[in-house]
Image (tube, rainbow, N blue to C red):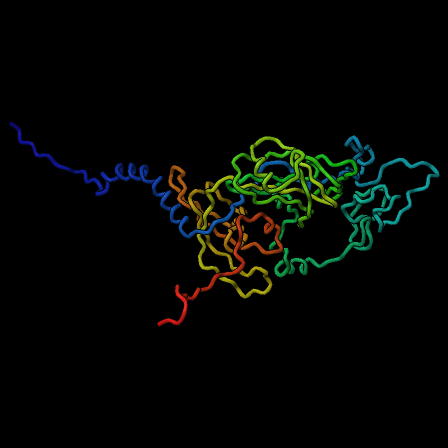
Length: 400
């Protein structure tokens, strides 16, 4: 019989057998670990509202560029041959009647009745028959004086002025281009603009303002108050960035908070609003869940930069794992300090199967002059911090 001498030339790693065991353990424990992280936030975490930036929806009227188009197009939306030739060659084309008196108007008054392009000029021109002439570098144009400025001086102002922090001019879309601007986490948010409602007979929409403004006494629209609504975050009427008083009825009944809760059935209801003055949009927001977005703050530090109204320095914030998605330019409004925060960066923390374990976001405080601060807050924000309370005896009289 031959002599057999077996050898082992392969040396496996020490953790080779632990791979399959670890994979099964992670799949079985990931749900428990997510809940464990969430429970840690619920003990002493900060509550608030997470606003996700919209990327689709109804276009806001502030994004329209019809002022320039109205000067060169007729009612049918077409331009005549003369204007087309002017755009191609840069020269003036057209036919003038012999002996006809030209339109006389003061080029410094674009709202003059004799100015057929009144209120529609976007550029400073020489005041000819057509507004698409060469831009005037100095002097007076169709829409006023041409202000001369130094580019270096203009750029240097960005560091000290509010323009370095506030680049949003419309609180209907908050710079997103879509009505509402943001959608709140576990909430139903509705923004109704003046061009989405039925105005009263004397009502009028000012289409030359961005966004559109309406002047009326009453307007009607159809709204749906979602079924299961827990509380009302916002029920306001706005004129730009200012709230205005109003009265409303739902299905012919006088509007009260109790009536709004009673109508929370998800069915369409007729809303009639009585307002005296100009308005831009109506904002409705309803909380739909008792599950909130939780945050964990570090110790906040305030700087000595007196050029900032909100002197809190940017910091890192940790969000709970029940939040499905966070991206840059999202807004967080917490309910402890009432501090609006804008997200600057969002490192993802999840498994390979996209199980979210939390979010570590770099945020900065929103300055008071920024329109993001107008987004609705949730709950009552304490007015001041509570100091240590002294211990009181539970008996009267002199302590023995």
